[in-house]
Amino acid sequence: MKLPRDLSGKELAKLLERFDHTINHQTGSHLRLSTSFNGEHHITVPNHDALKVGTLATILKKDVAEHVALSHDELLIALFRK
Image (cartoon, rainbow, N blue to C red; front, side):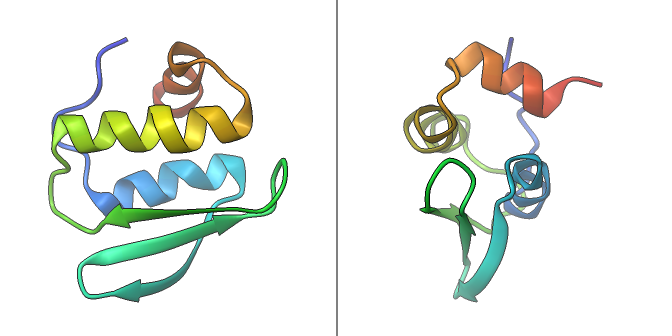
């Protein structure tokens, strides 16, 4: 599955609510999200209008997919299915 090219940081934070991530606070142009799903976990997401594809891929693959114990493709399906 191909990553969206126009996803903002706020939209990503909204999608990550499916895995119980909530915005704790914002510092400058970055959002801090936390979850207790599958153990405590924190990630930082740039609050930009359109996230760069590499940044989005790294956040999803290295941070979120590993924490929720899903493959990268399974995570994309769970987040972006219509």
